[in-house]
Image (cartoon, rainbow, N blue to C red; front, top):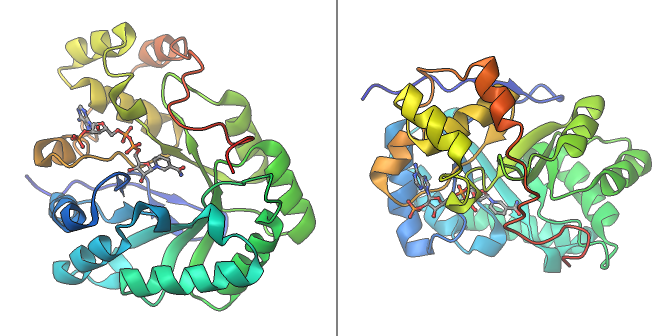
Length: 276
Ligand code: NDP
């Protein structure tokens, strides 16, 4: 299979991120190297990990072994809740870089606002410093609600380049996406397949049958046509390749309109307002 051309999204700070990347949540460290290697061979160039996943080292080994130039790779990692706060963030970032074996990351995210800790503005100041130092190319957040985003923007003037949120046809997040659009924040979808829970939706399977693509490919295409950055995870080599093979077909306006009715407030992960 030839390497497909993955389009990029240009973030508000000018940094370009591949619109489709590879997520490694719940992959044990010793299996992560093989999964990321398969993904890089298939043509993925963007990898999404996090300190709490415990597999930054596994990602780093695959990146090093790939021989790919660093500037062709886009690496995201995340600050865990227990490491929030100014000094703790700087220490956690150093530990992530060491585990990854890198001297900078392309995107560094506050993993959750953890509002009861009330430390995310301090963590954000630390990430702003890391960005100014060139060790983080783009500063972003994850699981932030409009109130959390407003507090960062008003308090620091630095607008997060990205908010990575749970988003799939079962949880369409229309209000939050409109907030992002109004503030120049790129939307990145986690659990883009709802960990499989949207793949047997009747609207999805009907479009899959008509187009000859798989339900997962239909859902990923929905994300891409929404303009979302998407990071599906798989440890299965055939699925890793299948999830990248989504640039040779398009959903019609009627498909998009049918998919807009599949929202069922399906949260597969925690509620960002109460998860600390
Ligand atoms: P996904 O929605 O990507 O779904 C992954 C699941 O779907 C796995 O069980 C996988 O199985 C299966 N799958 C993958 N491709 C296919 C396919 N083509 N056909 C059928 N089944 C398929 O879930 P994730 O929760 O992993 O989310 C993706 C990424 O988002 C994570 O890996 C992580 O990087 C990020 N994330 C971020 C969070 C945050 O708080 N910021 C929270 C959760 C995730 P198998 O692996 O067995 O092939």
